[in-house]
Image (cartoon, rainbow, N blue to C red; front, side, top):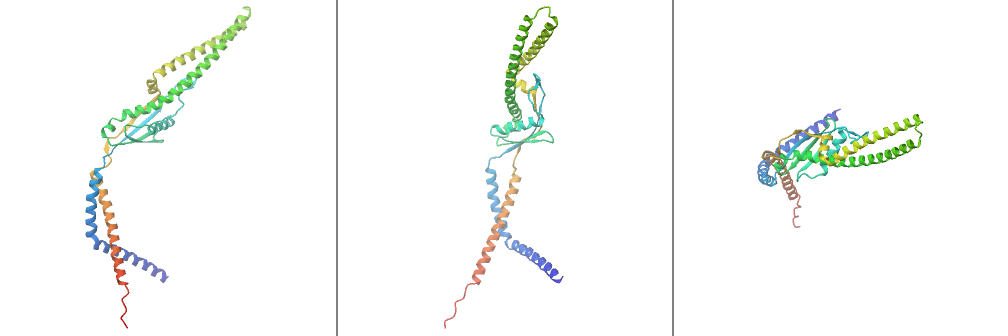
Length: 281
């Protein structure tokens, strides 16, 4: 029990000695540390200000697909999360006039947080319409592929239905007019085929028109809105530069003072340990 108290007392004494040494260190070197901090700060602050100023802006985007069914199938099979992730991909893959963009999708808010940075403040002020245009352009490419694929499917369906229509018409001419029941059944089948052909023809013309006006069609099918937009702000201020420079200079000054102190102490110890020359016998 006594040994435990002795150990704790010794640790407390060591801590007190360490703290005393630290206080003594700063008391002996405060002039050196202060002067070095001032000199280094005077060098660091102008050097930092010589670097080109960067500006930043924050945008919050909401991307919402509008469901549209063509020929019994959804043209773009995307929900809000899938559409937003695609928008993030479009923003990452494109250049924005020397503006660096860092988009990130927030699945809880279902919004895209976009951090923009540039050396040109005016370009950031005018960037919002370009952001929307870039996202819409990305979706235009997706829609263009979907429309072409759907037009190919519609053409194949129409060719099959025309073949069925031709076969039905041939069968109708082969039956006797007296076979009313069979003729009526064939006529109903042909009417259904003609109706389906008319519907697919309407879808085909609609898609062809949408393909010609792809940008307008994309704006109807994908809603891209800026929910929140911050002001353009500099990434650093003189106050921030000064504070960082002073802190960094102070740490370097302490390190330099500590190194200087260790060197002086080492020299002193070495001088004391020099062997004295033995007297002549």
